[in-house]
Length: 186
Image 1 (cartoon, helix red, strand yellow):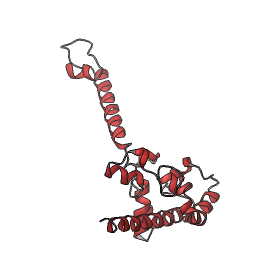
Image 2: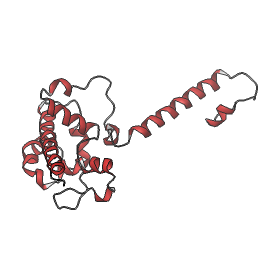
Image 3: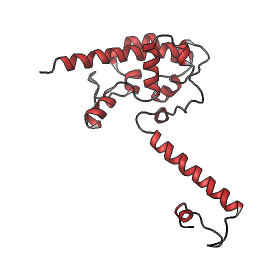
Image 4: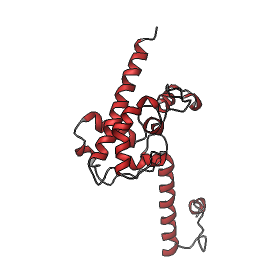
């Protein structure tokens, strides 16, 4: 009875057996609590839920449709909200969030959204890979379109490939930049 009261449930009689209706209510409440606990943990940085991407029920299609490993990796990191950016770097280096700025001098936090839609450093690649993809999907280049670009299944196979090519190019450049930074430290 004490454990049930912690869940916000009460028995009709304190020492009476649990009725089927009370048992079903307790099961439903436990299921809700477990779901809420899981989603609250999952909405942190390394989760597609943070971008509104539902968890897959099977191995995502991009594992087979993206034949180049660097494309798969970049696309997966973006879907997991773990793409290499100052948001992630700052998280692991203890840099305050407000100081995780992009080097492009726009004064914006370097998020995946910033890299895909606004960073001037990636404007040529954006015009090559992202803008035609958005045009084909009849989407404007807005932050809310990012989860749609990271969906696993698109009507035309070029969408995932174009987004993955863009992301792989950004990731490779960021990796080179971080290695240069590390090697230049005294």
